[in-house]
Image (cartoon, rainbow, N blue to C red):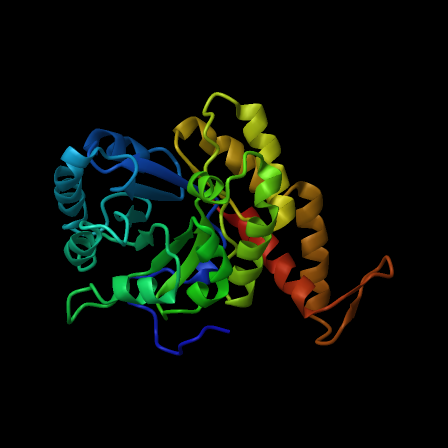
Length: 293
């Protein structure tokens, strides 16, 4: 259950919509040409980055360029989210105050969220008279992982959480994926417990290694992640293929959903398996993913 009953903002997309998103493509905010290409790339969501991808001397230009993009309503065929600068730095407040009221903004991604206090402080930067846009909290530190559920339920506008694994590795001092297993599981469980969509996987940094990306996506899917953020358009079809349900999964889901239409209790399938409401909900999500564009 969510922590607050307040209604979501009018321009938000709720958990149901997020559960059919598989690809989230980053584009640097100071490169309008790259952002324009990202909007035409086929990704489900474009993530305009004002933080790590932008040099300090170009931060102001990146914000102004992004504001221009979002000022006239939806800027393209897919939603645009913006990752603002570090919440404990001098730029994030101006980022939020400038961008949150704009009609083309579909979400704010808040980097390195360590706890609920910082999340709520960032939400408080939205100018009075404006709805808080959908918020996506990035967990990139040990403290953020320990507070994952509190962050996920800490404000009515939170629509998702995700890991920032590069910074998390550095904070934890781990050099292999195995060192992140606890954090990955914690994020998946916290999102589910909060009633949010499953988190997407963090970026795969080697854009040339499509085979490694496919294998890593398969592992992420098995762990409970849904979709992945990307840093290059060539990664998108690999992520899409890895997370799309197979024909066998679709057939099994159809059997479950059909059975659920005739029996409101625990269901017995033709092969003798029993399934409950949680399994039925998972089957419906599988069919939603199969029907996406």
